[in-house]
Amino acid sequence: MTFQYSRSFAHQLDEQDTLKEFRQWFHFPTNAVGEDQLYFCGNSLGLQPRTAKQALDAELEDWAKHGVEGHFHGKNPWFHYHKFLTQHSAEIVGAREHEVVVMNQLTVNLHLLMVSFYRPTASRYKIIMEAGAFPSDMYAIESQVKFHGFEYDKAVIELKPRDGEHTLRNADILDAIEQHKDELALVFFSGVQYYTGQLFNIKQITEKAHSVGAIAGFDLAHAAGMLTYNCTIGM
Ligand SMILES: Cc1ncc(COP(=O)(O)O)c(C=O)c1O
Image (cartoon, rainbow, N blue to C red; front, side, top):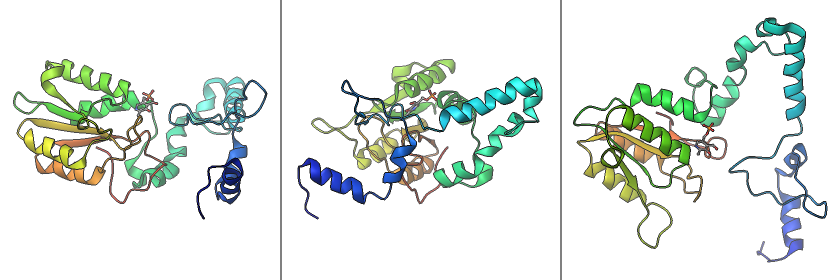
């Protein structure tokens, strides 16, 4: 099929889209003349699923009906809530069920992971990450580095694309790891860069980090569910 720059061609592609049924599952904000907006902000906040209100109302009803006993009674007893999403989360990230748990928010989890995995010493304390990482990730890294008594500029190496380029070259990432190998504690990247859409080579970055004695960690907010990996991901 030859690409055509026309509305009818776009409609034709929509018709052939095997995922088109999913569209009706979401609320679309409308524009000034009442039409559904063309929504391209799923990388920030996605559209509200039509079932979201019903799901929240069910929990509120159980809270009203059972009070604290809602932990053990009602539709989804809250005491076990972390188990309800285990199977699907494991499938989405390609992990085993005992390797995943749904809890907190991402930044809290990042801090918890770094408490376990970022254990800097006087000689091995540096972190390599992408310049322009998601802001809350940068703040979390900064807090951890300062918490351990290091200065951000000395401890954190932010990798930028080469002049005139918009994405990082994988070889440059691997070279930077090699260059700082004796002082490196952690290599921290996203899976998919939230702004440029760059997919990082998680497998090679992880292997290179491990080969120099560093830990590799990835923020998969924009990758989980969007891509299929054939390698184990995570810290
Ligand atoms: C790439 C990325 N990292 C981190 C976060 C922060 O997530 P949270 O607000 O759950 O801490 C977000 C939120 O959108 C994100 O997109």
